[in-house]
Structures are given as C-alpha cells and as structure tokens.
Length: 138
Image 1 (cartoon, rainbow, N blue to C red):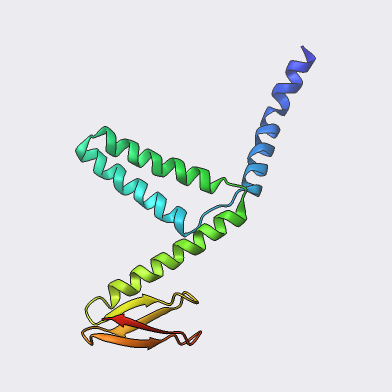
Image 2: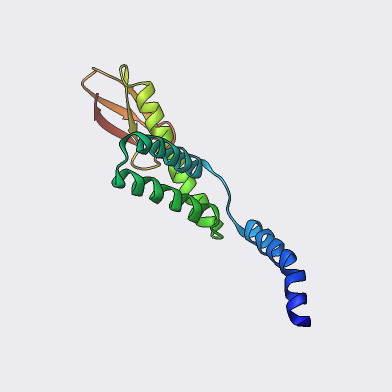
C-alpha cells in the first residue's frame, strides 16, 4: 500500500521530468517544420469541404513528419535538411522573381546562383565566385 501511495505522489513529478527531458533534447521549429504545419492546416481546411480520405491521409502524413522532425534528437541531420530546404526556396524565389526578364542558373563548380538576361541567345557566362566559364541558352 505504501508503494502505491509513493507512486501516485511522484507521478506528477515523473511526468514533468519526462516532458522536460523530451523538450531538452528535441530539435524544435525551423523553416521545414513551419512549411509542414502550414501544409497540414491548408490540406485540413480543404478536407473540410472535400471530405476525401486521401486528402485526410495526406494531411496526417504531413503532421506525422512534423512531429517526428520536431522531437528529433539528431540535430545535425535536421540542420542539414533545413539548409538544403532554404537553398531550394531561395532558388525558386529568385526564379519566380526574375521569370520575365532573366534566367537563373547554378554554377556546376561552386553552386553559386547566376542570373542572365533572357532573349540573348547563347551567352558565355563567368561565375563571379570561382571564375568558371559556361555557355548557357537564355
């Protein structure tokens, strides 16, 4: 009987310690997690009107990936994923911003973004970072 009382008396402290340790070693929020949670809410709102199981499962998958990344203790891998995600988003934003006047290319040597004017035919471009010369169609 004494052990049961001790268990229930310390249950609150044990749960509190569990959550403190869980958050201490977790990765937390980053750009990918923000994108995942926005996708989850957007697809969930769409599912309210469509009431489709496939849409429901898609939103659930995004939420599960969000939870796994949020509570992950492998911080090095999450930082690398976030860095790659930011590069892709930066490339897509530049491509969208200059879609009418320029073409965006990536240097094969140093991965620097190169912006060239559209409608000039074949242009030999020089990378400003590494100096590599390439021929691009614009």
